[in-house]
Image (cartoon, rainbow, N blue to C red; front, side, top):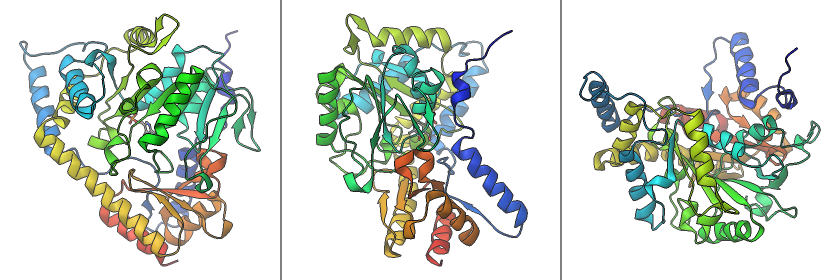
Length: 404
Ligand code: PLP
């Protein structure tokens, strides 16, 4: 009789957003006259900008003719896109990253979920707490996390690094030594960041103990403060200890188009083995290249016209972030994030649990957010609102919350 990978059976029952979905559905069915505003899931709401649409139309046209038709894309991505990324995202910021160190994929979720495959099963992982759930869950599937303690919501082999208001949401160096350190900067869910100086501490630490930093910069486009680095490769020493994940989902609205990339410097080695070679092998074996049309669409993000248009879109969402942040602060809430990230992280009032506050907002204001405890034990007592709604919905939701 066949057997399944029983690591999957260890995963706690329901995923955060499915629990939210069920609660919202039950409430809507019982209250069909209520209009619910969703500021929960981090999906974008604005359409693709004109420069991207134009590039996609042109690419579709290319596919219609024998001379310009494209079949399988190169496994690691088209050179036109890898060169644009290397020049504009990295070299222009003084980072020493070459085009052949960039791997184009269909999004950051796949890459940051799959990257653990190329490291030893015995690797110890360290994560910030609260954390984007993909990092831990993908390691659970690989049998790397030990046993689950449902009372605390933690795994026995995972090193948790609490990020709370008390430490300014800056993780402290762990007491036990990890092999893989996941850092998400700007952070989902807390919306907070690290300065160059703070990130340098992590780069030096990783080089000292021989760990790899898996740096998820999916929200890089939302950074507004000068001292916040846009890439870990802005930090000296990162080439020997870091891998970076990027996405076109949040800067260009590609959540439904799908495109991202991973940067692995050739200097990142275990003994004589380049991690870069392993990921190239893995990518070539399990991934057949991101679509031509999509990569052409991403090229538009690097054109002058496209750059200006996507910046405007980011500014649109950040106006929402400011409205949420300022209004809630003005109403007496303790609020964080929202300056370099499209997420606002607030302390639940009067010691309410995250789920109690979720129910309270759903029932009294018909607003949906995300309970902080869904992102890890240190998220208890916090709540996440996203700035990805429309401006009108965001303003209306905040008015409702202020009215409570
Ligand atoms: N990384 C973080 C921290 C995210 O919050 C998300 C999406 O919400 C992703 C990665 C996924 O990005 P993509 O849409 O490119 O798969």
